Image (cartoon, rainbow, N blue to C red; front, side, top):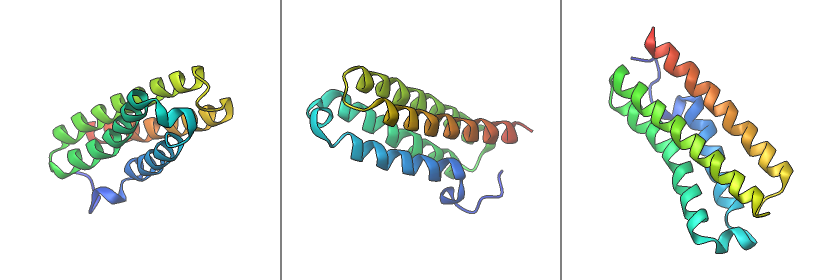
Length: 120
């Protein structure tokens, strides 16, 4: 098992928390807020990233932790896919999309690194 004392110490979780807050703020504005389906789905996906990191860690098993980290990666992809829709519908600017996509890619890299660490 990892040397973390709590899931709050995990960089991936910390970064996912920031992303989730940004998604909530972003999806509270204007047209995005009125698109209830997309708004709710992107929020659920963002929360899922954080929650699966935490849940996997608390399982206290490397195998379970890896599985939940992979689920988090899937949720990250879902968030990014939803952001493309938000961009296409002009709910968000191109600059905001690029910033969030970059944040997602960074979280994905940290998750990948942690998964590889747990494999060895």
